[in-house]
Image (cartoon, rainbow, N blue to C red):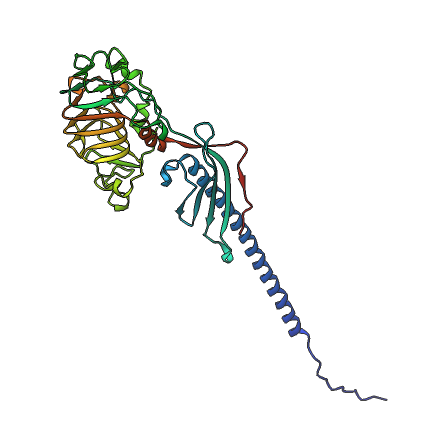
Length: 401
């Protein structure tokens, strides 16, 4: 007996492939997103670390410059109650702030200052994170710049004075009550024999006031220059003193590369600068060397501060005058009635091995006044003062991002 086969009709069943694919895609997408987020986070941390180090580096740079290189930052002279400057660089800036905590008391107790440098790196990395910042601080005191003055007018190659008009005085013109030294110096200081073979000082003693009137500081110009307390080689090279202005023989302001400055904001207007800045005593460096080059710098206006002239200088006319210090590598010539109140030194190139000749002595004509003034010397050398840090006072802040 044969049975007929049984036919069972197929029935529809719900499949699992599509849900599995969707699940797999979701897992893969989540993994990819997690990987991107992880990479982004690691990159953000890496950028934060780099900018944090940069911020710390720039903050420390600002602190060191604020202490040792104030003139280059435009912060000349002794700090006041507070001064500050901002230095901008590619991708950020740093602020250097000096705050006085204690004023100086006479010459025995120096002023106390708090120097702070705050750097901000504005360059951001992944995700536009905030700027990195860092602050470093240090305590410091101000050491006053000084100058050992040998006379009202010191000429290491000798000095000739025509006639008895005028006055050359080593008597301090600044009263003791106003901070004057009360000390009387020689009127002139010269070698025994000048570079022209004549006497170190050749002229009338009538205009000379001092103790003594003439001080002989060496037998020859070379011996006199060797006894000088001034570091002229370093000053001549521009390494010992940071000038406020650097000018050429014509008095035009120079850039660091030696080219003429065209920006009026950095130009020295000899005729009006001290009218608008009556309390300024800048350091002005005149590049008219080398010795005996015949390039004479002519000063025909009034000024204040420390005037450093590499070679020769001429004070020309009744409008020429100076309050402060004049340091001259070559000789000094004067025409007309003019006055220098502070201290003047010439013939300093002899200190560098230059052999002076008959035309290298000072030649004073007309009604001259070279008057010692300790207060003007102090003001002129104030720009040479510097901050001296106290040990173990450096501190820093936590950097932020």
